[in-house]
Image 1 (tube, one colour):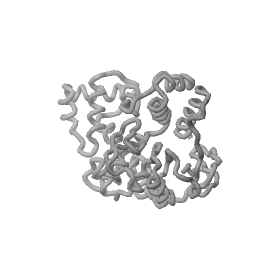
Image 2 (cartoon, one colour):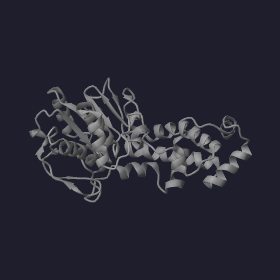
Image 3 (spheres, one colour):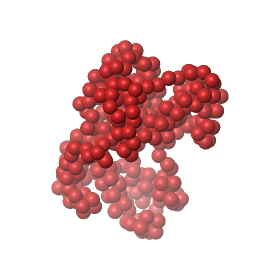
Image 4 (cartoon, one colour):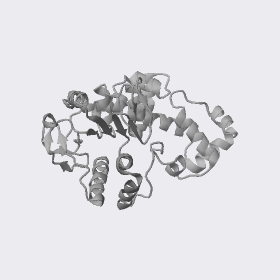
Length: 311
C-alpha cells in the first residue's frame, strides 16, 4: 500500500500545483474486483485488466508472496501492453512479473533489498543493480516503499522541471529527492546501532561473504584485530560470538531463499555457505524451530483472507 500510494500521490499533487491535469491514472486488477493489500485494505479498481487499453505507462504493484502469481494472466497482458507501446514498470516485487514476462532482458532493473538475493538467483541473466529505482528506456523498476515517491518525482522533474518536482516533494515533507544511486537500506551503523569502525568492517565482510564464509582468523586479519579482540567486540556490542553472528546472517539469507525461490534445499544450503544439506537442516531447525522443508511447505499453503496480498 505504501509503494502504491507513494506512486500515485505525486501525480495528484503535480496536477494541483500546476492547475493542469497533466496526469491521469486508473487502478486495474486482473478480474476487475477489489485488490486486497497485505495490510488488508482493499483497493477498488476502475477496470479489469482486459479492458486496459495502451496507457503511456503500466506499472505493476507487487507485494509479499509474489511467487504465487507465477502463472498470472497478468503476465501475458504485460506482453500485450508492451507490444502496444506502453512503457511497463514495477514497484517492489512487481519486478518478478516483468521478469517472468521476459520484459527485463537487456534492461537494468531493481527490486526491494529483501528480495534482491532471491531475484538474482532466479534471474542470473538479468542486469540487476539493487539501486533505489531504475529508469532504462521503456522499463521502470523500483525497490518499493517510499522509493516510489522518488521515482515519480524524478519522472515529474524530467517532464515538467525540477522546480515542480521539488515543490511536490515539499508537500510530502520529503526533505530531498533521492537519486537512483541512493542506498535502499539504512547504513550498517544505523541498522546495528553501533559505531565501532572495526566491528562494522567485520560485519560488512560477513554480509559480503555469505556463500563462501571467511574464517574467524581471516576476518580478524582483514580488520587488523587479534582473534581475542574480535571476540570481545562481538560479545560487548552484539552479545554473541563472531561465529554465532555469522551463522545467523547465513540462516536469515537461507530463509529468504526458501520463501522466495524454487531453489532446492541443497542449493539453498550451498548458496549460504553450508557444506551439506544435513548440516544446514540441523542448524536451521535449531534456530527457527522448523526444518527447511517445513518452511517451504508453509510458503506454498493457500493464502487466507487475512494473509492475501495485493496484485
